[in-house]
Image (cartoon, rainbow, N blue to C red; front, side):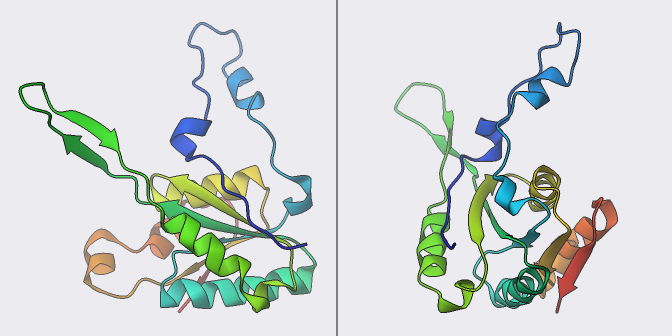
Length: 175
């Protein structure tokens, strides 16, 4: 079983809790559950970079050995863009990232993914938060990410480092 599935970004999918509700977790329970075939699978962050390709290769082997599913997560860059039309005040528009569609098509054609069942999940927002959230939703056994190389990771902190500090499940960082 191989394929891919596109979900709406997390900021549109999550229900807003009713502050007047007696049970604040009621809104959380109304969220649609994930596919049970991928429960206790392996979550891997993937953006098409070299380090994420190495992380994907490791995660495929891990999922194959444990006979579990692979949850490939692409956190899209959904940056607000200012649109100004004449004399009206500027409006912020959420610009979608179509890279997930391209990655999904590339993954669907990849022979190396034929060994394990997999899905592709698109999220928008903070990479660390979204990877941990997907791991929680699928009750993942581990989260696999590639290491960050470069000046941006040194200045702002790497995704792998931040995720390892805050995650509630094992995080495997592939160099």
